[in-house]
Image (tube, rainbow, N blue to C red; front, top):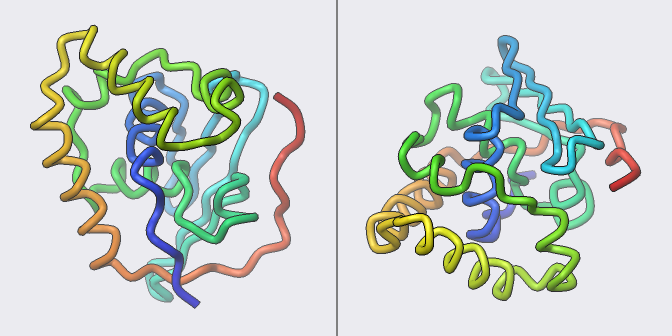
Amino acid sequence: MAWSTPPAIKIYEALGAIADGRVEVDGNTAKVYSSSGNKRYEVIYEPQLKAITSNDNGSFWQGYLGYPMVAFLMLKKLISFDSKMAGWLKGIHWKDINTQFKYDFAKTEEFVRQEMQDRGADLTSFDVFKDRVIAEIKLLGLNKLITNARPPEGY
C-alpha cells in the first residue's frame, strides 16, 4: 500500500526540521525531533522494498507521508533539498502554530508564508521548489512499511 501525498505544509515542516538540526540520520533510519523538542519520531526506510515508515501523527493517523519521512528523504538525497529554502523556516514553532490554528493547514501555511516573507524569502522560488518536491515524492511511489510503533505522546 502506497503512502498518500503529504499536504504542502509538510514540505515546510521537513525543511524547518532540517534547518533546526532536529534530524539524525543513521543509515536507513532516522530520529526526528519535534519543534517543541518533547517528541522523537522514528523513521525506517527499506530501499529494496521501496518502503518507509514513521510514527508521527500525520503518517500514523492520516496515512500521508509525514514530515519526518520527507526530511529523511531530503537528507538521503532521494528528493530535492535546498539549504536556503530551509533557512527561511528555521526556528518555526510548528506545534504552537498548528495548535493556534486548530490544525487547519491552510491557515498554518498562510501564517508561515508571512513569516517567511518577513525573513526575506522569495516565495515564488519557494513555491517552485515545493511543487518539485511534491512531484518527486509522487514519482518515488513509496509503500508503507508495516510497524506497530505508535506516535509518542506529549507536547
